[in-house]
Length: 238
Ligand code: URA
View (tube, rainbow, N blue to C red):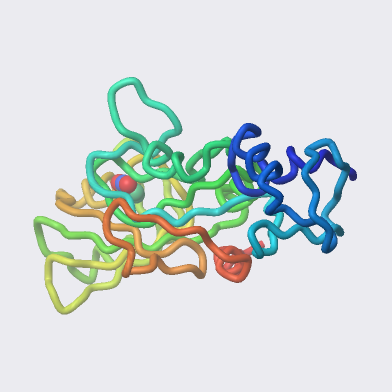
């Protein structure tokens, strides 16, 4: 499909049409080795577009890994609170971003933000069982019986029977690893609630086969490569 050069650049770079126009008029945009100053020239993905000597990679969608801090809500907009999209949107002014999956306001760790609706639907679909891993700090110790219950499927206080989940102890008796294969509201807190155990901290470390980059400080984010996005899918059970 052929589209106008100015639209192509502004979509690919996430910059305004006005800024695109400035780039073009400076003569720093080349299409197939020739300087082009007009925005209405028609191009497609096969044209090699170079801006300031750097080849433009057209990205239909973006996938962002955010290390969510406490106090931020997993939403696009919110009247009262700062959202995960608020933390990244200045870098992506032209994208309709949303979080693909939620963490509670008090939880921390890996939140995936994208503008690819089909991808989000895929990784959240209950049938696909994309796993999520959490490091959870509890107010009491767990025991073998609780590990077994998680494995066979916990029944929540409201009668909901959950799928099998994995509960693994660590060297610290109050810190455990939990692996979920479904997403029910406040799931981990409610699961431990059944055993009268409170959750003090909840940090998501992995989605599918992709681990949170621990070099990302709370509130920091990075764009994922195609390989990293594929890792998310790598443990899909169909
Ligand atoms: N389970 C919870 O209770 N909270 C989260 O944020 C994620 C899973």
